[in-house]
Image (tube, rainbow over all chains, first blue to last red; front, top):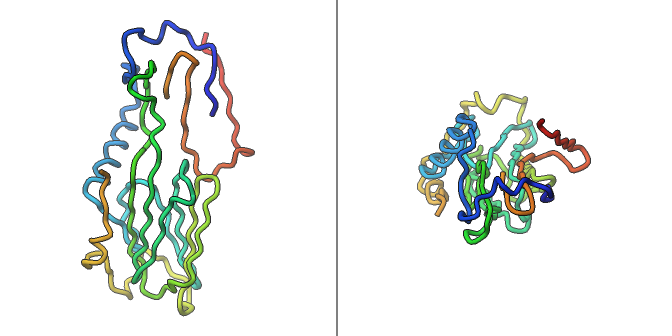
Length: 183
Length: 30
């Protein structure tokens, strides 16, 4: 969104460079932001079984008899700088989003700051029937879609969140090594 | 939401929404 013109000048304090304003804020949005930051700090990772903890970026994970589909909601990224890896059924998505806040020496007021900025790394433990050579990733309109083919066709579609036929790999040392916190 | 001498800038994350399908309207408060 381009910067507008004609803002009332008296709303900008002359003596402050950048400040967080005292405007009333959405308390729930602030709590959500804090939850996301705690999520990043403690490096929780969801599995394909649907552990619904939240972090950045938000993920949708689902499956078909032929593939697993992951949707990563991460606008504002350089597609070339997104790192997607699949190893031993563990999908790793890493990248960095630039901080759009004004520099400290700029005379500007930050009224609301809910937008995540910085490095991120999310790890999702998937099933072990995926073909690492059949991974497709496409980034469009801020949405990253990763599609991974299965090595063998499942007999019938099942809910990924109730599938109990395969072991979870989330606590393996390799999976833990891939977890990364924000600097 | 950032305000500086040029005006107010809003950054809104709307992944999956193309520019063509985005409807943005600003109404002055009186």
